[in-house]
Length: 170
Image 1 (tube, rainbow, N blue to C red):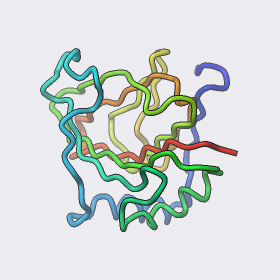
Image 2: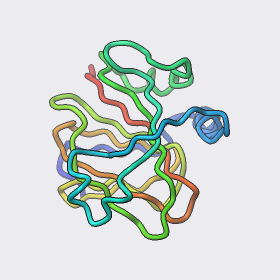
Image 3: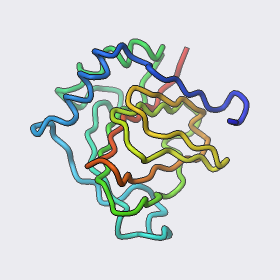
Image 4: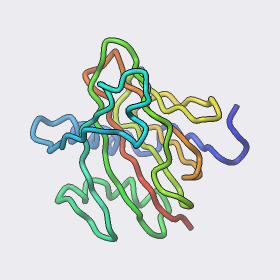
């Protein structure tokens, strides 16, 4: 189904209590989300360029934690076997009436990308290969960062929330 050795999907990645705690934290009304007016360099080429935005929270960037909320990711990071972090951020993509696809992109060259799905919804991550990974709470997809991918909106929940990790592994 997936390109051999390039995409790995793991369900029930964290203990249920840890996954529930992350979801509760991200859905809390006081969790700070920040508006990002674009998703990628090719937003203007998409079918719906007016819907190429999201809300983000940066946890780690430029070789250091950038958020006081960084400790909530401890169990996720420990399980990942990360040697060195490039970036960790979360994305909150609001619901739309129809599924809107974002532009294919890579986050960073020559490392590992992982997407952890915080909540279940009918959005998904699509790869340029045509493979799709649906947003299921406590699922993680791990792949070569040079593999182009894109996200979508969802139509069945208020938002689609994921944690995007870029790192070097062991």
